[in-house]
Length: 224
Ligand code: ATP
Image (tube, rainbow, N blue to C red; front, side, top):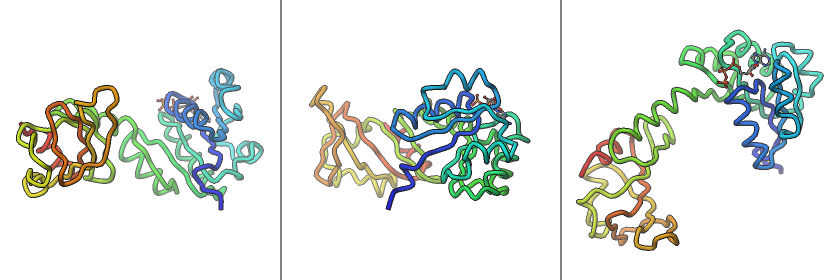
């Protein structure tokens, strides 16, 4: 059975968010139909996406004519025009699209989109702001929130866990976090991330991937 992950995607609204998303999908070999009300934006993307069209996404008939009901996956990437964002989401729900992603500008907008049928709502600006706040504070080099309150960070080991096997560093009992992978500094350019085991001994300058709750990870990343 074909996986939904290979299915074509329709992106409605091709502003900075929608066009970046559409181009990234296309570069990974996904068929993408991009729709925007602004013909200049559409012309600029012609030839770079599988198909593009100029249309008002709040017009159900236009969406039908463009074959939108045949898509299983749709992304509503209209933000500022709340009315258009909500109406487009409602139309996609009515058309029976099984995976609707929608971009929201704030929590209230997100709540409305969920209520009118969006299956996944993303808050890109809020999400990026939170992510950068984590990177700015402490020793985190990268931060990915995997689920509400659970995250993975890339960081360097604090002094007190360097030079001893992970089993002896008691990270779970002291911080509640787990080191899942290590990239050894000593290997230079050849270094790759590999799984950490209880016998892994970390060195200064190594990079580690650590998972845990957001609070525990923050405490860990601020330790010395
Ligand atoms: P971004 O930050 O991604 O640039 P934004 O949050 O500022 O976007 P908008 O400016 O509202 O969002 O819209 C993004 C895109 O959606 C724009 O290119 C705009 O032309 C398009 N758009 C807005 N309303 C409609 C509509 N009714 N039908 C189709 N496209 C629309």
